[in-house]
Amino acid sequence: MKLLVAIVQDYDASSLLQALVKAGYGATYIGTTGRFLRSGTAAVLVGIEDEQQASATAIITRLTCERSAPPASVPQSLENDMGTDLIESVALGGAHLFVLRVARFCQM
Image (cartoon, rainbow, N blue to C red; front, side, top):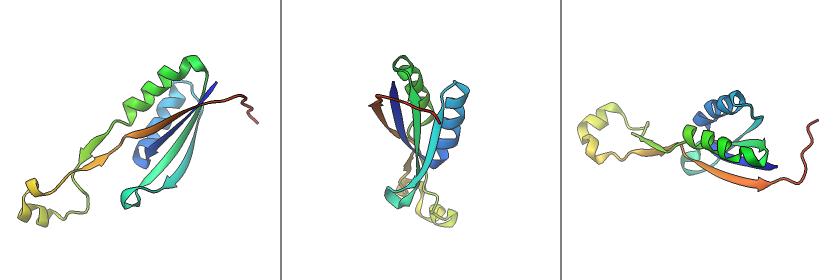
């Protein structure tokens, strides 16, 4: 048995939980804060059997892929004045996945 601990951004957590539950996995969400600009993050915990690791990991990978977007804090008028080539995009999404062996699991 294994415990997957996926650290994801808040806006990915809801869709990730829904997909994991739909696939038959039990999952727990723990909200956290941290990183650059204090963006919200979540720890999603998933208990799985060893043979389920590839399937569960594929769901996490598919729903938390890294993408980029323009920074939300740049006013439209400033963006028009500066031009879009001077404004750097911000990386969104992605995940840190930890796979831990579990000696025993009890549901109460």
